[in-house]
Image 1: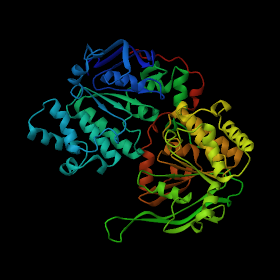
Image 2: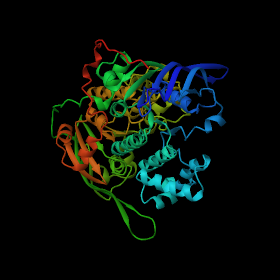
Image 3: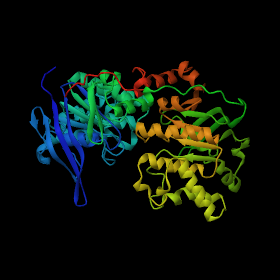
Image 4: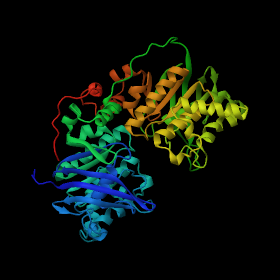
Length: 552
C-alpha cells in the first residue's frame, strides 16, 4: 500500500448561507484516507459528516461553501475547483454511492441507459463497447440475467437491487475513492450485509478506498479500518477501529457506543405477574390479496400466523420487506379484515367488529408510525396534533382537553413551550415523542409501534426506547413492536415472532429465539446484525484509561 494519502482533508471549514448570514457547520476538520483503506465518518444528524463528504465530491448545496482548509486528492487541492473541472474527476477518480436508491435513479429511464451514461460522459468506448461494459457491470454486482435487468426500470427492482445499480454506476470507471453516504440505511439487515460484502469485494479487487458515512456504529465497527467521530462539525476523536472501540477518549464517542443497539445487551428476562393474562391473542391469521389481470387469483401475504402477547409485555414482529409483518400489524389494529383467523384484543375479536363498533374500539389500540417527519400534519400546532384524537373520541370540555394534552406532553418529556410550535421546528426525536403522546392521549391498553425508531439516529433512538420502557412500567402498556432491526428488537422485546414470506418461522421468548433459533432464516438474520463481533461496551460509561490517539 502507498505511503502517500489518496485523500487528505486539512483544517476544513464549511458554512451555509441562511438569510443574510453565514453559519459555519464544519470547523477545522482534518483526516486522511490511504489507498485501499476504509475510513468511516460517524456521528448523529447535524454532526457534519454528510456535509464533509459532499465537499470532498464538490457537491455542496447551493448555499454551502468551503470557507477554509484544503481537500487534496492525490496531492492536488480540489477544494475550490469549478464544477466543470470537478466533472472531469467525478466518476473517474472519486465517485458516490448515495443513500436512497429510491430517489437516486431516474424513474423514466432504463437501468442500462443510466449505467451507460457515466461511460458515455467520460468517452469510454463506442456504443457497442459501452453496452458490453454495462452487461459486465450488472453481472459483477449480481444483477442477473443482466440483459433483462438492463431493460428494466427502477420501479421493477427491489431496494437492494436498486442499490446494486448505484454501486455499479459508482465502480464503472474504477475510481480511486468511493464516498458511500449511508449506503445501506434504508435496507433490511440481510440485504445490508450483502451490499456491504459487495462493496468490500469490489474494493479488494480494485484497491479502491472508501469514505463511509454512517450513523451506525455496528456497520462502522465491522467494515472500517479507521473511525473519525464527528459532533457539531468538529472531530471528537479518530483512530484505528479497534483502538477507538476498546478505549474511546471522548465522552461523546462513549455515548454513541453505549447507545448503539448492535453493540448493546439484550433486555433482561422479566417475570410477568400473570403468565396467562394475554392482551393480544392472534390465531391462524391469514390474508389473501386479489391479483389484477381478470383471473380469480390471489396472493397470500399471511399464512396461518399465531402469537400471544402477555399484558404489560413487548412482543416483536420481525422480518425483511415483503415478509408480511406490515399486513399483520394492519390487521391487528383493524385496518385490514383478514381472510381467516381470529384477533383477540382484551378478549374482543376484532374480526367480528365493523362500522362504528370497530372505530370506537380503536381507541384501545393505537398506532405509532415509522416516519416522524411524515406522520404529523405540518399545518397544525403540536397542541392541536395531540388534542385531535380527543376531539374524535372523547367529548370532554376544552379545559380538560388542554390539561390532558399538557400532561401527556410532559409525560413524554416535552415542556409546555412546545404547545404552539409546528412540526418543522422540532427534531426527529422530538417529533416522535409528539407522535407517542398523540397515541397515548386516549389512554389505550395496547400500543403498536411500526418501525417507530428506524428513522432516528442511535442516540435519539436510545432515548425513545428508554421513554417507551418507562411508559410501559408506569402505565402498564402492552407493546406490539414491528421492526426489521434485530438489534433493537433484542433490547426492547420480551417475545418475538420471526416472519418470512408470510409465514412465522420462529417464535417465543427473545432469549430462546436469539440463543437457539429453529430456522435457518432466523440464524441468517441474527448473523447479519452488524457489530456483533465487537467487545462488550457496557463498561464504556466510566472514564477510560490512557488512550493513544492516532493522528491523521
